[in-house]
Length: 337
Image (cartoon, rainbow, N blue to C red; front, top):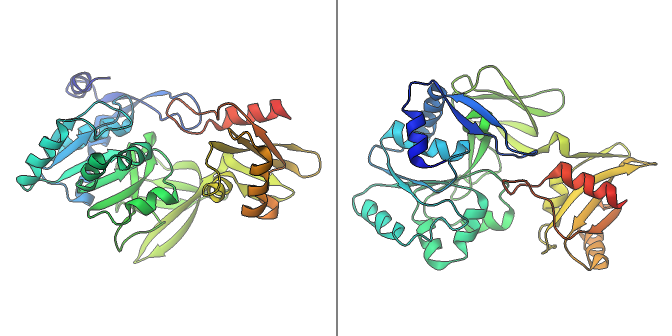
């Protein structure tokens, strides 16, 4: 969708707009969301980040999905100057962008941007793009996990960098956690209008009446804590991504994170049936040297997390939005057993 097309849809008489889910668990699906709730979400974020009329906002994500649409809605709600560049892995490479940013900074206006981790990572690899990234006053990052190496590169940024938590159903994020400065934290702090709890399965439950009708039960296993009179949460991984091996529950994301510093080739943890333990850990990797991968796993992982099977694959399966295609990976692993 183009910016002109979205603005036409936003300004028509309809009460809803069409968005597509991110495709975290498969193919993106269409859904209609209320414009009034999108405006509520925009106001909450703008207030939290103290965005002011005349500040600028960088639109660098596709307008088919909620993240891109919400950048535009925030610019409408808060009268921000919208700078639009073609969505790509290098959003800060546009030659004209430097002049625009310099102009607004010279006039004491601040720049806000929303990106996915890949865009941030790519920008850090090119000096001129990294300099522009550091000039963003409020950078929010969502749509994927932020690994430890990337977080470390962002830790000394001069302006605020945030990781977001949310989904299409919550009209973008409902909580933020700081990635740099003295407020750096692994814990997400919900907005004031949002309440969170944990259900009997250990999954996060969101109560955000301004952006979603009724309570939203997620598939994300989480941990809660109270700090300064406010409930915060930390995400452990998706409920679907638990391997129950001999009564020991193994979170797939935790195993992958543990291996991250040691495996350079793309890889993914999945699961398969096991006669003795019920389920067992399987590692798919694009690395050809399986013996080397096996040795790394034995050194880096606790005994009960070590893969029972390690398979070489030509390509790790990913979704249309560049997220792990977990269901496809499991089918692939089963075909290799």
